[in-house]
Length: 283
Ligand code: NAD
Image (tube, helix red, strand yellow):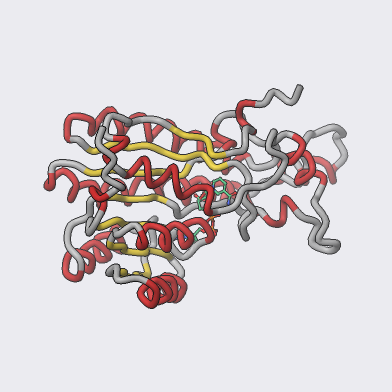
């Protein structure tokens, strides 16, 4: 294959949900530099607009920041109308809105004793609402934007979707039960939609980042009083053969590859970006 330096992406329109977040905003900066026009969608509209403005100051790319709720079909349709009016039809969708919450997380890793306190801190103390919210954000927050934005790709004869899965989708991590269930569903849905849309030349893939420190998981990885690694943070580093957390920039290359024509026969895959965590048995 001829090396075209990713020019097939030049001038095409890419939607990034959760584009105001840590990974989404870092990706937005990178993809604008690669020549894509961007629509940055986030529930935090102020942040989406700020990211769009930061990018516009640095690059020639057209960038919009739009307050959007990925769990609300009307909000997504309204964002799509604005994108059509100001940029055009969407070729690529990156579903980066998602995350965990303490409300979908047990305090205990294992239920070892049956005291009232232990029961409360275990699975039995989880509020179903907390579980549901985390599940919905990650799963429905991927499903609904895919439903709305891939319609443009059908009309244009092709496109690509990239979802965000997690290490928790392969083997559930302790404590984060709602998040694990949701990300397993995201991986499964990625494969399902890849098959469903294959004949329309719409590719659907996912990345499964390992451990990158952000607001959603800082409370699990660091002790908030001392700033030292938490016991869980230490365990993760011990189980990551590369021996460190990832930098957000280390996600960029895989995304660029999956969007581009270099991956034009690649669909339905979930690529770990994890310093070897998923491959390591711990021994
Ligand atoms: P983040 O919390 O920094 O960003 C998520 C963004 O989504 C935020 O800007 C938030 O405002 C937005 N958002 C939340 N609810 C929304 C809604 N209903 N509608 C629209 N936007 C909404 O998280 P991040 O670290 O950038 O993670 C991005 C994705 O990568 C998530 O799906 C996350 O689960 C996944 N991931 C992250 C890591 C990591 O280590 N950071 C690891 C594996 C997977």
